[in-house]
Image (cartoon, rainbow, N blue to C red; front, side, top):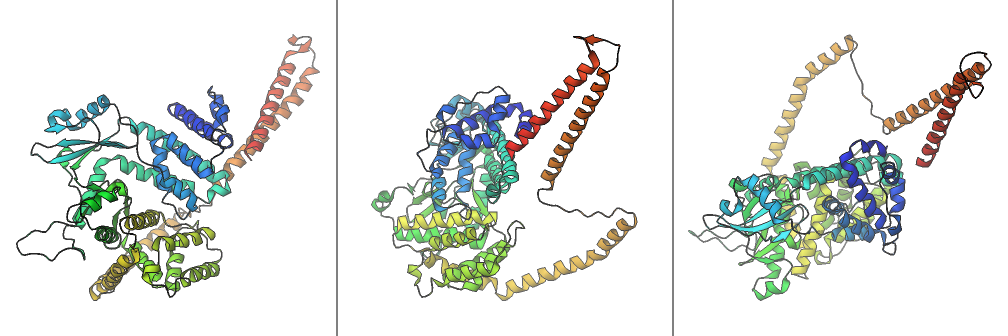
Amino acid sequence: MLWQALSSVRDLGRLETIASVLIRHGFGDLVRRMGLADALEKAGHALHWDDAQAYAHMPPPQRVRRALEDLGPTFVKLGQILSTRVDQFEPDWIAEFSQLQDHAPACAWAEVHAQLCEDLGAPPETAFAHFDPEPLAAGSIAQVHRARLADGTEVVVKVRRPGIVPLIDADLRWLARLAEMAEADSPELRAFRPREVVKQFARSLRRELDLSTEGRQAERIAANFTHYRDGDSPAPIEGVVPEPPIVIPRIHWPWTRERVCVQDFVQGLSGHDMAALTAAGLDRQRLARRGASAVLKMIVEDGLFHADPHAGNVFYLPGDRIAFIDFGMVGRLTPRRRDQLIRLLLGLVQRDAHTVADVMLDWAGEDPQDAVTDEDGLVGDLEAFVDQYHGLTLQQIKLPAMLSEMVGILRLHHLSLPPDLSLLFKAFVTLEGMGRELDPAFNMVDVALPLLKAAMRKRYAPKALLQRGWRSVDEALSLLGGLPQDLSRLVKAARRGRLEIHIDIANLTRVGHLLESAMNRLVVGLVVAALIVGSSIVMTVQGGPTLWGLPLFGLLGFVAALLGSLWLLGSIARSNRRE
């Protein structure tokens, strides 16, 4: 029950803010249904219902996006995560979520300065040869300042916003409680798996709050590009160290902490300014191919990829080189998932319906909440989907459109993508959009197909097959070696009568609460009945103290029975309203 959450008084002010924003954007009915209004009224907080229809003329996706913006950094980040769930939301919702920009007013310099002094052990003016107090940019989590090291290296200093953690912690607590309520009480919302979404979101957001984690992720990706050469790189010249085609800013660890990250300053042209690229003489077609090849390499070969490669996180350098920045949102793929992805993409570009259907069924069977009620129907829909691309040339195939249609089939069959793939699909769509902005004739399939075929050849090379075979043999031998010990423990536990079998039944906890509530009402009803009978008997007994000429104890018994009856009626009415 939401009122139980008010035991944490520190979150009550934030709850009032959340409810007020929802009401202002026309979600007053939602506030009432979730119990927020009752909770705040009991706590003595007044809500302003007059603004409830201020945004009623807007479509629901736009109203939700506006509400998320007003609710602050936690909810802006939540919207950005939801924009990756193309398998759960219709395109108009995804389009609105994608408009959520990570911009915010800069923090007061005094607060930033005090935090930097704590983290660096010295004022930034002395820790750096130069430090610009005016931020280059400010986001919901951090803001960035320009600085210079003692050796003359130009750097940027990313500083976490002071006081942001308590606010985010309060928001995450409320989101977790609301997700539990939504999943328990609303079959419509349960299909979106709110608890899983909030859990994934909280894990991602807390990782993003640690700026040293972002530094480690950047270093891992940089290491994967150490010896990278793509098809557009010039032939190497003996004795000359070529400039890397892909640049990842270097992290300066002596100054990097949980709340501050110092990295090289990238002097390049923004991905937003196409006219400047042309004026600088950069080859936009080459940039499109090179950027797509780099991100596909991260996905297919490395399993660690930049999950948000939009224009604001990409800079273009002389020599048609590309720099990626901001590694707060990074996706990870296990080797098994990469194998599945390679099979899926090859099946799409080669119009192989059976391969696509096999991979999708594997994904659908991973989560016990995903029940393929009509497997033949799913396979039939996937085969029809792939067959419509039969006979088309690679130039006619639009990979993002194919992925969008595919997730539409998932939604039709009430299936979801595994969480680690939602970021990936979003990255594909963003990458295709960037490529077409650079080069209107850009086609992701042209870039992806050679890389996918090379990955498949590598996967089935004799050395790779031998390694997987030895790994399987080792796992089988390990399992057989531990089997006698496991059986021995099982038999001993059975002999001692301590053999336990745990069965987890969905919604069993809620059923238990309902039974407990019903028993409490039954007990109160019996007590009320006993008080009425007992008080009636006492009223017939002569002697003892009286009040208004009536036996005092009998009168008190009737009063207690009346109060118990009122509580019982109120409890039943509240239960009916919740239902």
